Image 1 (cartoon, one colour):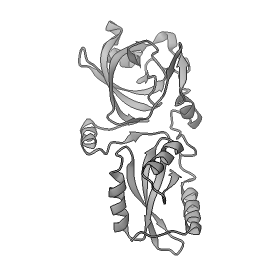
Image 2 (cartoon, helix red, strand yellow; image 1 turned 180 degrees about the horizontal axis):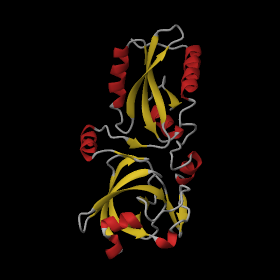
Image 3 (cartoon, rainbow, N blue to C red; image 1 turned 60 degrees about the vertical axis):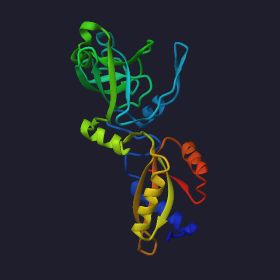
Image 4 (cartoon, one colour; image 1 turned 45 degrees about the horizontal axis):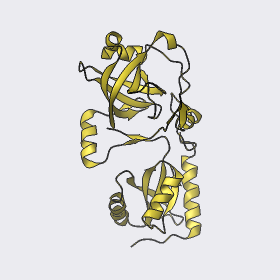
Length: 260
């Protein structure tokens, strides 16, 4: 049976939640990494205009793919500042992409010769029609771009901030719709709170099936009386507005928004 929580209990629980998570990396809407600051992440996910064209950065999931043309950039840009605040290193494994988040790990495969390499997005570009990624000199050389200049490629999201997911795991996650979403902000919706873990599991399965873009989780907390309380969250909303739209769309009158 679903446990109805009083307003006072909710306030206490939320206070405890932020007390215990206050020292984590998630100090705001955007999470800092060892490569990119929180402020830079936020700035690079805003819409922007280059040469009269508007670009809208977007969040991605591990396994997402794109096909197009790859180019490379080298000595003329070496040492200059990239979009995430780093200094461009032509000998590093990095690349520029117009819309994918900073620090997204990307496998780039040259469709002309079969060569591939993994890069980390740390810049915006290339702003040339048909081109989808601009690799560093080192990555481009591995792909054979130093000879051809450009090449047809397939790019795939394989992780975030240095962490790379093996291909066999990506394939399994895609089959079961459990792939990780590469997120820099992570709003959630609480859909239920239970005294019994079994009840929370039922809600996890029920609400997780509403929209596969959002991952259902069960969080255990100690209630004010010392008994365990299992809260059911749907995580992966890109903004507070998206979470509110979800609540309204499914008429979840008792649900409310949380941030992790």
